[in-house]
Image (cartoon, rainbow, N blue to C red):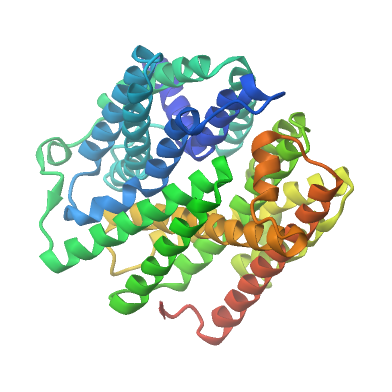
Length: 456
C-alpha cells in the first residue's frame, strides 16, 4: 500500500506541474480533424476558449470570497469540479452545451486545485506530516515523458485526451483524499470573511480579467476583428480599474514572475501560431518537446547554478540570459530557433522556481495565500503577454498589408504564404523588442529599488 501511495504521490506531482500545458494538448486534439481544410466554427472552438479562460482566471475569484482558511478542502473541491466537468463533457459529446458547461467546470476546478494542492503540501511539510520524499531529477525526467505521452494521445482524438485526464484526476483525487491531514484541515471552514470593499475589489478585477481573457482567446482562435474591439475595451477598463483603485503594493518578486511567465508564454504561443500557419504541424510537437527538455534540465544543472549565485543574483542572471536567448528567436534557421526555445525554457523556469522560493520566505503574507498569489502573477503574465501579442499581431498585419486579421486568419485556415511569413517576421520583431524592453526595465528597478515594493 505504501508503494502504491508513493507512486500516486509522484503521479499527482507530475500532473499538477503539467496542468498549464493542458490547453495545448486539448487544442491540438480539437483541430486535428481540420488540418487540411478550414472547417471548425465558433461553436467548435468555444469549449476550448472557455476551458482556457477559466483555467487562467478561476483563481482570481477565490480571494473575493474571503481569506483562505482551508487549502485542503479547496483542493478537494477543485478536483471534484474537474472530475465532474470531464464526465459532463464525455457524457454529452454530441451536445455543445455539455462541452461548454464541462469546460467551465474543468477550468475552474484545475485552476483551484493546482495552487491549493501545493499549499496543502507546504502546510503538511511545515507540520512534519508529509510522509513522501521529493526527487527533483526523477520528477523532471518523468514530467518530460508525461508530456510526450500527452502529445501522442492528443494526436489520437480529443476523447482520448479527456479519458486520459479523467483517469489521472480520479487517481490524484484518491491520493489527495487519503493524505494524512490534521483535524484542523478536515473541519475548518474554507474561508474567513474579509471586508466587503476588499471582496468587491477582487471580484471586479476577476470579472474584468475573465472578460479580457475570453476575448483575447476568442480573437486568436477565430480571427474575427470584432473581438479585437471587445478585447481593447476590456483591457482599457481593466487598466483604469487597476490604476484607479491602486489598493495594493505589488512586490518586485511578483513583477518578475509575471515577466518570466510572459516570456514563456510568448515562446510557446508564437511558435504554435507560426508553425500551424505554415502547415508545419509536427514542429508544434518538436517545440513542446524542446521546451520541456530545457525545463527538465534545471535539477541536473543545480550544482552549477548554485555556484553562480556567489557572484550575482540568480534571478538577475536569468533576466539577462532570457533577454539574450530571445535574440536567437530572430533566426530563420530552425536549429538556432529551437536552441533559443530550449535556453529560454531553462532560464525562465529556473527564475520562476527561485522567485517562488524567495516569495515563500517573505513575511507579512499568510502562508495559505502565498501559492495563490504566485499563481495569480504567473497567470497575469500569461494573460498580459497574450493581450500585447494580439495587439501587435493585428497592428503588424495592418501595417504590412492593411489587413489587420491576415496573420491570425492564416493561422486559423493554415494557409500561410511568403507574404504571411514576412508579416510574422515583422510581428516577431515587435513582440521580442517589447519583451526585451520590459526585461530591461525590470533589471533597472531591481537594482535601483533593491526589491522594494513597487506600486502599480
